[in-house]
Length: 82
Length: 138
Length: 120
Image 1 (cartoon, rainbow over the protein chains, first blue to last red):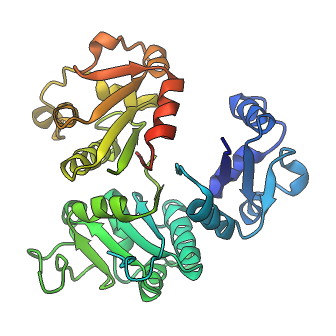
Image 2: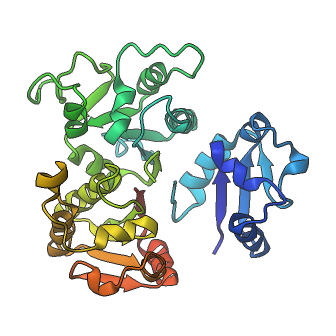
């Protein structure tokens, strides 16, 4: 199963590298298992998380709303939002 | 309801459960909705719980993204926006009984572009939309 | 047949969220949709039976009645075993008709049944 996670707004905080808690661990596991994680470039920059502070493997994504809508409407069989 | 049958258009349904400005949720929803419309999809939005506050006329944030204006723009671009009558009544928006002619509950305080409606308006959106995303509820 | 999952992760009363979510569940059922309500995280508190007159005590409607209605309308209600255990809730404390499932089983429900997922 292909899984993509989109991080917008405060969600991008999950993408910061070097986390020692379970979110960081779960994210690493997800990436190892092939989950795609895309984080909004605008939201990262606004929150002082430049690309070098982002967990390797997480895709810093411009115009994320465009990619998100496309993925949701054309590719996803299942969508969950929080 | 967004009329998809006539043009085979895919429809994105959305729910907003939190009010504007207190969090970024309404902001994200409006931006994603506009993107979907620009890409040619139909958009239908239901305001639920505190989300109904997004319908208030006269919003004038000094520096934040104006959600009221954003929603008016969405409707102009073809989105359908309804809000929950129970939630709206609780929060002081509803002025009378359902108006069959206008297909909405009357409200002086709510934007004309938003239709205050029964919850079944949302159930229909859940049913008829191709995909559903929610903002501010979990 | 539209398959709907209502994902509840709040306890009742402190926020309107759970009440609002359960309402969507029963309204969807009354419109012929196939509904599964998932109780996970703090949502498992919503499954506990024995609410004592919330309307009289705290002026809030009984979510226990909403849960019972959903079950009567043939909606499926499931609760996450791990979330229950973390919170010290024994399955016997739950309203009749709620199934206790593993987290994996709950994930399967979302994948198999979650055409539309409404998260509360």
